[in-house]
Length: 150
Image (cartoon, rainbow, N blue to C red; front, side, top):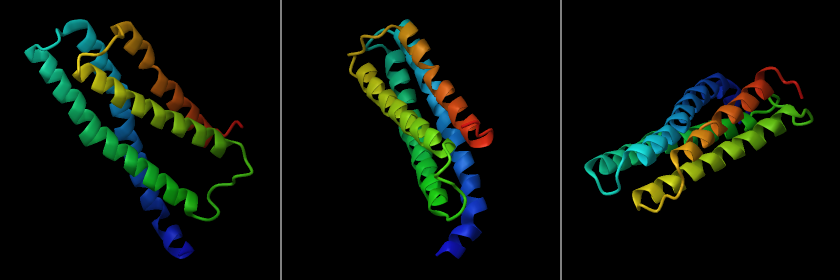
């Protein structure tokens, strides 16, 4: 089994990077849709229905599959012996940030549901601030993995 993991590692890592890029694109864009949805759209209007469709499809067709592929590839890479030294601090920082990113993804899903049912209570400025969360987490992850300052 380790031989198969070693042989597959560059392919799995490549797919992981592509999935992360797709996931991050959605995590950056969905809160921006929430900003415009809350600031510019009347509940029940034709534009409201359009935004709901865009938000739903972004989450279901792009973000959810990308997150799943990111996790599966990440777990396969973790299972490959010798690539990650768990006595170092960086993989733990990355793991915490990935769990936080997943939590943010789930938060986006819950906010989409609130907007779809007309129950949102947050102004656009709230979503603007929340839009910075994936950026901060991405920076933590990238620097933890590449620069390994910890």
